[in-house]
Length: 238
Image: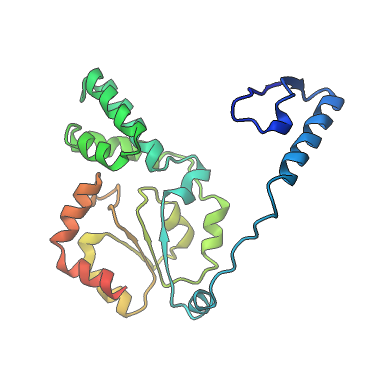
């Protein structure tokens, strides 16, 4: 298998290597030695930070809450925010919800890192039922299983979990038969579960199986939460 290395952006120690075959033992060894030299110029190894003692104590005492984002489900092959939005733009263009020129403008906006802005803009053009169908197809695809990181979360001993994720991998990993899944619509139940210290998963952007709870864009979340006084009380208590 040929490995091609361009000069641009390549450390000086590797710039003399233009191509090599990993089947050639001598060439592979040369690459290994060059990589070792590069590593030796990067300074001392940075150790993983030790968690604060107060956080450790909170986990031991069952007084912690997990906040889980899309990155934890990425090893299962699911998209994170900055890969989901370009995919939705692609689907919207293919479905005829947005014209090619507008799709191009949205992609240029994505290049500047304005993913929330594009999501808000896109959801004003895509029918809600179609957008929900796309999300179900992506995040509830058959055969999805929780990656190893989810199993580690069970050992934290948290009293609850909040997530912005649409997938159900967190629920599969953490919930027992008597545990519940809530959304911001369930503010009263969330407050009760929190005061009773009953474990729950709160899906901040709603559940894909409950269309009325779904919030498909950041602006929708902000608008919904602003008018939800009891949910604001829950978040403050949390």
